[in-house]
Length: 161
Image (tube, rainbow, N blue to C red; front, side, top):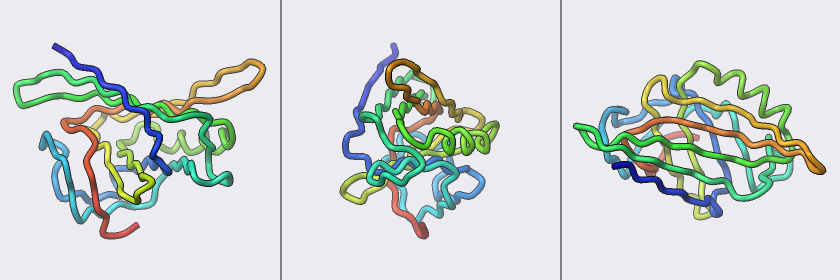
């Protein structure tokens, strides 16, 4: 039996896509049901959508959503995470940075209004990012991120930013 959950990320102020190769995380990706991870070394983000700034790579059109679908497996649950980030400005920059993530493993970090951060920790070879165009009286784009994990969002602390 599969369960599907959708969360509106109203309290998220920043979304970062960070290549796995520039991160050192103290718990391997193959450990399931992780809820918190301390002392993470996370490198510079390849793509950033900063919701609190109008001069960012992208300005949110409406609230981002995160859909998580979990499937039971012998060793726990496999979770498919689909993150949708509507943007209205900065899409040329977003497209350019998306190209540098093609074919590479990456993680997603969500920074909240409270300052806390949450990680979407992806299994190898499961993270993808695309940009969907919608044209009409107002054109807009949606950044779509998909990845698979053995955990839901993980609260993290960094050793460097």
